Amino acid sequence: MSPRLTRISLVQQGVIAQNEFAKLLMMGSRGLIELAAPLTDEERRDFEIHIHGSYSSALAVQVKSVMELVRLSKNVRGLHCQFRVRAARVVNDPLFWYFFACLDRKTMRFLDPTFLVPSHIVHQQASPVKSGGFWTFAVQASMELVSADRWAPYRVNTLDLGTKALAIMRRQRPGESTSSLLALPDLVWLQRR
Image 1 (cartoon, rainbow, N blue to C red):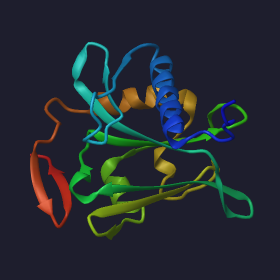
Image 2: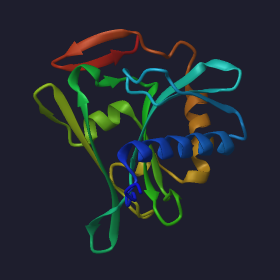
Image 3: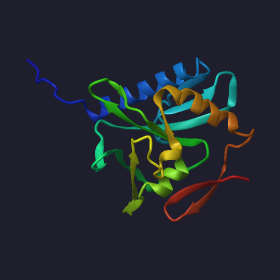
């Protein structure tokens, strides 16, 4: 008899979150968004997404999830997501975004709201701390809709995620993808020309 699992593993949580994200983008965009998962994860992208038939509007997205909310104060629930990145792999690019969500055990779906945030905002505002060859980032975002914290501009309800991603990709200008690297101490920045 095999031991009973009492908890979702981090690997399982990641797979569930990625699939839920993909479902919400495809259904929320009425099939306009196409997703592709890279065969390797060396560049920290879970998905490359683009508008069907328009390959110049691609975004790279890293999906992050938590399974519990924290109390930020007596009446305020918050999403707290901490993660480490090797210093050489921290990339700020207008086409690289993070998605943060809380997976609810009871409803087996993301709680509203979720957060879709440009990489440079995460790397600047998520309490970055460098230790050795790694940066640690901690996103602590209020789940309360009346909140005006630093993450509020990136808040998006699950049913609006597909249309939000479409709007971001449609705002891109042709050739917006960056290509030249400007090296800062242990941090890689991409510069627009």
